[in-house]
Amino acid sequence: MERCLFCASAGLFLASAIWVWYTRVHMRRLMEHMNAMLEDAADGRFQESVYDESMLSSVETKLAHYLSASEAAAKNMSEEKEKVKQLIADISHQTKTPVANLLLYVQMLEEKELQPQEQSFVQEISRQVQKLNFLTASLVKASRLETGMIVLHPKWDFISPMLEEAASQVAAKAACKGQTMELALQDNFCAYFDRKWTVEAIYNLVDNAVKYTPNGGKIKISLTNTELFARIEIADTGIGITEDETARIFQRFYRGTDVCGEEGIGIGLYLARQILAGENGYIKVKSEVGEGSSFFVYLPLQR
Image 1 (tube, rainbow, N blue to C red):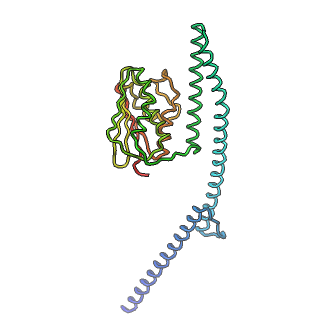
Image 2: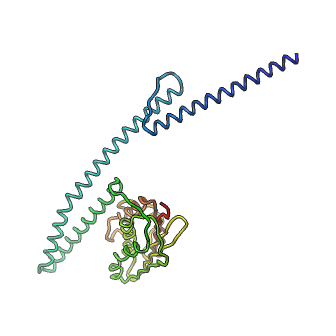
Image 3: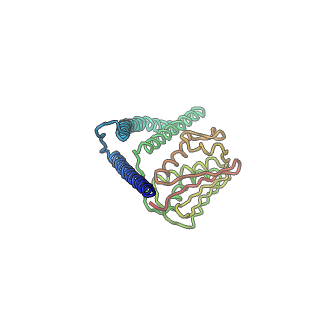
């Protein structure tokens, strides 16, 4: 009796072991097949095998449908991207000559002896044409960045000369408002960035600091070396930004409620964020209403 029980137990144990082994082998083969399917899908070589009633065949069918839909969506997106590129090129080409002609005619009128009221009209026309020119150029830049028409080429370069170049572009405007501009650039070290486009991003930030800081205020540009990033801080003693607006100021065309009367179209910060993101950097802001704002730009120290 005991021997029979032992034999039955041994047989049950052996059957269980064989079942476990079979299940593991089956699962391993299934996972290897699924892995091969995903690798083929990633390489664009996936083909559905002969259909049967198994669960694996159902998965293959659904994966094939998904890849087909993804391919069609990618093709449509590529076509739309090309259309946008062509539209941008057309806008840039078609508006360049009329705006240049308008600016030329305005300059010719400004050289003539006009009545005070006529002079004010000409000055207003000049201001509006310049605004239109700036708006068109900014839209073209933003659209080119979004569609990949402009490719950033970050390289290992010194940061201080780039900051000095950006600051020099707004120095005259700051002087007209009696503002003090300080560059705290004791350490001149390097980071990875595209100098041409990063200068434009920093210029937009410094120009905003000058624009929204009252006469006699102060703008400070400082540079700090952190573990992974070079941190650039543009601090001002301006009007500040409310807490609920700090999350929206980087949106295209967004302008705060307190600055609607100031000159601008609300695209400078958006452009700055797009440029920095394109070179694996980022931007943050800290502000207090009535006390001023600090914008922090982070440039990567590694490629």
